[in-house]
Length: 196
Ligand SMILES: Nc1nc2c(ncn2[C@@H]2O[C@H](COP(=O)(O)OP(=O)(O)OP(=O)(O)O)[C@@H](O)[C@H]2O)c(=O)[nH]1
Ligand SMILES: [Mg+2]
Image (cartoon, rainbow, N blue to C red; front, side, top):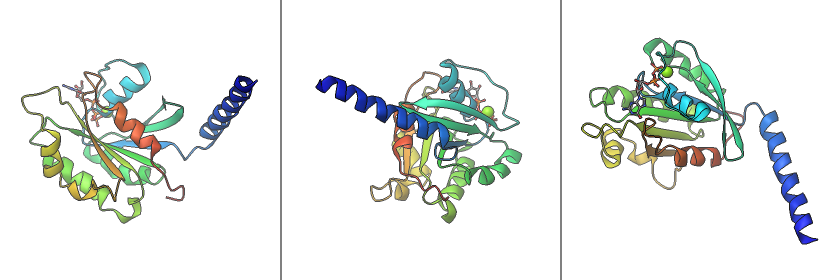
């Protein structure tokens, strides 16, 4: 008898969750940004097709639906070249969560990535939006920065303290299919403000 009650309770909880997540168009919207060549579209290929794709540079925003646990996310990949970056801010206001991807192996372009990241982190209008930093391409071991080096070089230590768990840094390799899942799970668990 108890197992039937448990089953009914679990069924209702699951069904209610599915109904909520599939009907609330804004609550699970994620914007994926970062410099061109960081690996953003490669991540969408991993998440939607579970394989390593080779994509041309993104010229048009594209939207992808993926499931993390029981949460359905709509991820928009806007592209990272200079013209596309002008669109980021517009898209940020219709997104409840952000992913900023960095090529951890590209030492020349780290200052440019840092500047774009700090623009977002210092934007008062975005201060309640959870942000996951994915430091990609750690498989390029000759040049990839370590997590500690990146924390320091990106100047994000002050945003990473426990009082402000709004951001998280994850080292990953989309090529090797490692390191990003924990970050995505963290991202979907973060409380969001729907009036952003
Ligand atoms: N070594 C390595 N290469 C990767 C990894 N992830 C992506 N790449 C490569 O990085 C290059 C750029 O990847 P994209 O996913 O197209 O980059 P993007 O961020 O979407 O770039 P834009 O569309 O121009 O903004 C491709 O050649 C990928 O194969 C990784 O984890 N390791
Ligand atoms: Mg792309």
